[in-house]
Length: 508
Image (cartoon, rainbow, N blue to C red; front, side, top):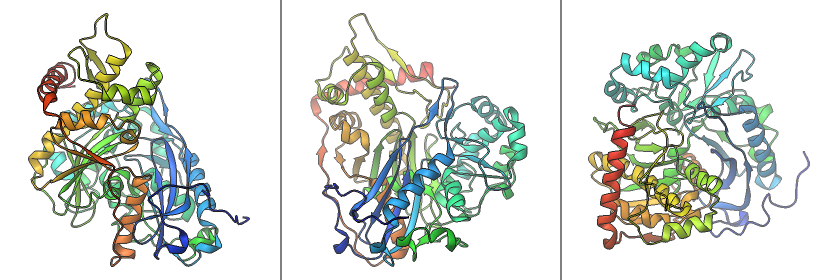
């Protein structure tokens, strides 16, 4: 293709970036597939983004009231191909880029036929149509045993119930598919002619034995599949073998690059904002959300509301996930017609006893109750309750969901010294971090960084490609300390949240 003289983003004025001429080699290219867009950005060996060498392609899931949540996998392949064409097919990068990595939302599933073509959409973590099969699995299996083996409880976002649902509702697809893989694995298969599952991607399926690092035979039997339809597993320091050089020659800047197996975006979101040790708990708040700590040991016991995903032989990621954070904010904007600026003002307003209680489960609950069929509920709504009060209730309800995760995290992590919050919601609604700090009763450090998840993907590659290079440090935007005057208010709000949760969600 024709080479372009300008960088992909000549208008890039983001502060945390380095000019290409000053970038420290080796460079790495990080691709990130999230719920709302595919992104790609070049980083130097310090983990600093290279100014101008980035691109983004928006997309969205196809959803419906029956629990459907899918995206076209070939659309994502095209998006990432276009990003690589624009950012990496450049002579000035030749010989400098040594790694290409990919993270995607987790978990995901694509059925693939003999010739390597997708015969299903990509089922996303938010697709809850397998709720009946989940209920049946919970009758058959001891869920705490399952959690101890694979690091996660049974849920609609994991693959055992999804495979059962496919077998019952689409048996012809199960018969035709010769391979099943995550979205990232499918992208690499189409682009490189080979693929593998990164350990972090395999762990997010709910089928990986967290101790051995292999597909767990008991969970495969429960899912109704065999190991031969799944991909081999590679740790983060292991590049993909058998990459077709004829395919990668398309990108002049990637002639000397190694390609790494796709990993889960949650891991990369943590690493990207500095959550690479046991002292830092990261609050991610984007379309979905999570609280996580990267442990450098394997805990024997996992609190029932959390997951513990294997990363490699020595590390795992402990935490809990929320389906609806940015998605809930978008719902407020679309349904109540409140824009971001207004919502930020609502978050900054003085607390009010007339604020309704809200369970913010638009697409079901993951941590801590794992109730995939849970839905949003408003309580204490009166004739005087206006849109602003309902929005405030939703924002407090999101903080309540994080608090439930934090309470269980405290049982398992004794070394946490700081809480770092990042993600699009924290940037669009920074005042919400005061609600979160008040609700948690602890200071929250706000890390504002463009493409932090992609940066985490870059840093993961650099662990093996540039282990001796000192990483750049990004200064936080500020700290939101809890206000003592609001302590009793949020104690009451949380007590109400728990009562409503017990009445409407617990046991579902």
